[in-house]
Image (cartoon, rainbow, N blue to C red; front, side, top):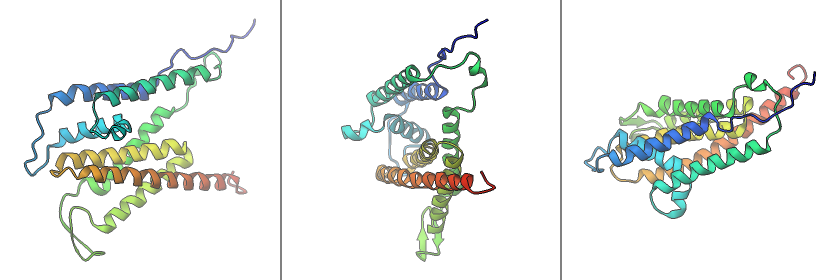
Length: 235
């Protein structure tokens, strides 16, 4: 009896696409229901911050190109592009043997999600709990809310976490996930409690810094992992 012929998987979508679509719907539903923003000295509130940061993230980079705050169209454009990329990737994917779907390893969506959570956890551990003024032993003056050593420790932790994940997974997944998780958490917090609007500048600078820092850390992680695997007795 002939063995079953290889065939393409019937599922072209990924869990990441479902999360993407759910977040787009959530933003589109929540945004009109939010009360008008009022800067009363305490910022617009946590819900505004979460929705705003999510909307900026899902609409990037089109809102930067248009020169205005993110609207509905950038979110939908990115969602459509996500669908198109997945559909084309499936057409180009090699045929799979029957039954192989049952033994699928941890996929890219799961790894990216874990990397996002790792980035969020680093922010929460180093910065998320601190909203007080403290004495900075480096600048020798009071700083609010973060001090120099706190920021340096946070940056170092981001690099170490990214390198460790890149050594085991894809460096792109590691760098992207950690950057997205950390950036989203910081931006949501800043948008919620900043009553000046200057957090947008900080969010842009943070995005650039994270992209550069996590890319370098991921590269280091891959290099170290390659050397360890090629070293005698460690391969």
